[in-house]
Length: 568
Image (tube, rainbow, N blue to C red):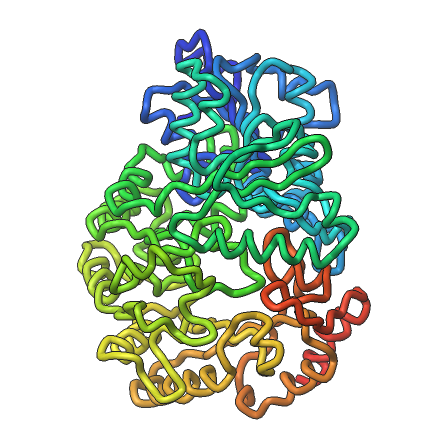
């Protein structure tokens, strides 16, 4: 087990620690938690790693001092969520619980956790480098709109004082960075590592970089901020993007291009680590809600090429799908039987978009020069292979493992991967939907049309609601012919840019929704580094600079959501 206390370090016989990771979550040794992944990955390569979970930042800071200084550096993350999303609702009300804390108790991490933790560490240990990462740092690496302060904030590198930032999925950059620090490589050499960012004073004279509008200009001109985001978004969806440089205050933030998408062998390596798949023993007898949700789940791949404007998956995990091998997945499935309480039911065999497993462009040379944000919107890319053959074969292999009763698909699916308004996409589409409904849905098939009105859907980068109508038709045919009891549950978003009370009224009265279970409506929350949050702040569509309607009044946003329930 990765140590979290002085006693545990002593029991291992260590006289030093290479890397100490400070995190806003309870420590769970499971591959769904980024802290565990990085700790185990560095451990595999010979480094001594310890974790300080949920340190108290309001007392004498003993939690930050208990393990002393690491030999190489501190790593800091806020946990599996942005701390502000974790703390507050869309109406900016403080949440009463925290799924990533024992017993679901709130108040065990600060607002803007990455900045708070880093500031403390830089005061206590000014000479020790601090590398920040995880969701909060990754999605705040540039100038960004902060919904809770209702203002633009500079890169978290500037506000926190961190030395380096690792964005996205960090196994490869973190290993190279660790080796570089250990070898005493020149700072200018370290600053060339892919997928890291840093703040430097002065002016950059780097050739072949793309220079963005400065933070100060963005503060004065919302259009400049929208222009920045359009460039950032375009580069984030390229296979080989350039270096991005954003001037700020007396210096600049430099964000290096990411590593290429991980190969299947590399993905297998990331999962072939000695995870216990249990919370740390320090939490014995304490319920951690987030862990209970995923402890019997299996992650099959990373990335999403759907390109929804309100989503951060591609900004963090990448657009290109990175899949594990069937052998690696089946090995993990077989090992589930060793986890206490496993009764043969896999709660989720999937990923951010479950049915993108194994999918990629037929001609990879075209993908290497493509700048599309979405491979599905405004229409599916003709180069994308949407066959579900490999995924169906995986489902069948999992079902053959002794002791596995059911493998449910709890994560989201994209029905535009197997359906068009005219019908099924290919010969694997109908078998996939039928098996999904009859074998992998526990009683409710949850899908996300998000809205019914085309003007809103276009601003979300989602397909026409007519496609959902086609899905319902095919769903009804399958369930009626099989006698299988299953409900179709659509998810919607209220308050998104472009959506007013008129659009919500039309949504609530849409005849295609009659007879469906209708309570899944989420009020839009602008989160850093999404197109939708840029629209919310600027009132502009960053792709064409057209003005759009935005409902910013919290009470009227509440009315949009409540109106739906009143009508129903």
